[in-house]
Image (tube, rainbow, N blue to C red; front, side, top):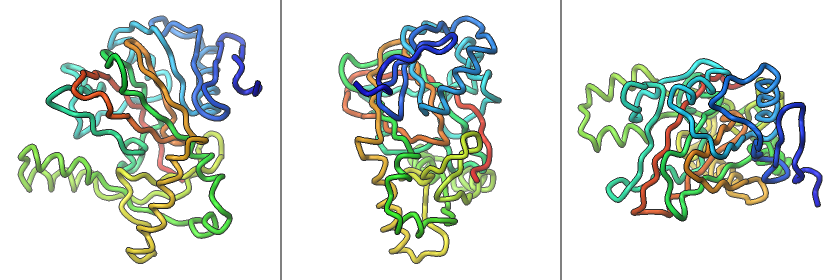
Length: 285
């Protein structure tokens, strides 16, 4: 058995990896309690190593959800997505018979921001009996797996990111051009490196995604599309992935700087209710 797949005992946390490089379940922690500096330090180290942390049987309140996430930084308010009443930092993500799941595209969250998120803490409130898994991809591995030729081609390249996905939704909901223009002014298109160097680990990872990346600067349209298509496809390679089956009160905490995720929308018309809290990050370099 691969050493990486065995449970690992740290000073206070017991870790059970899902795969050799991405995804680890924390088996002995109660997120309803205040965590010690030692436990928080180990959680951060585990996040940096495994990119996604999973927790089971965490029947926590909204306040406890927020408190846990704040251990890792200030929280953002999503300007477009619906939030939980009285809790602007908590995204309420509900899909049912009348609202089919649509997050089934490989992506990193809010890369249309100048300072995209450090990570998100997603809690399952109600899940389908079958289906509704989330896949996560290791974007270090996605970069490492590229040919030397492609690595040389994207070295130092910049890509433009935009919230076009949400703009389309605004139009469907009937927002006026003036209202949408106000969002355009507040959140203009941003440029991020195609290959991001993680601010804490120093490792290189792919930082383009099919949801929000528009084009690569300095390439003609056809060349940009072809290259992005190739780069997007790296996230879909099974060897770079883990897959998480949700249960009520399960939690996933992912590093948005080093991973992408894909919410499988195979459960319609069943109900899937999730709540997400997102930690503000830094400008990609």
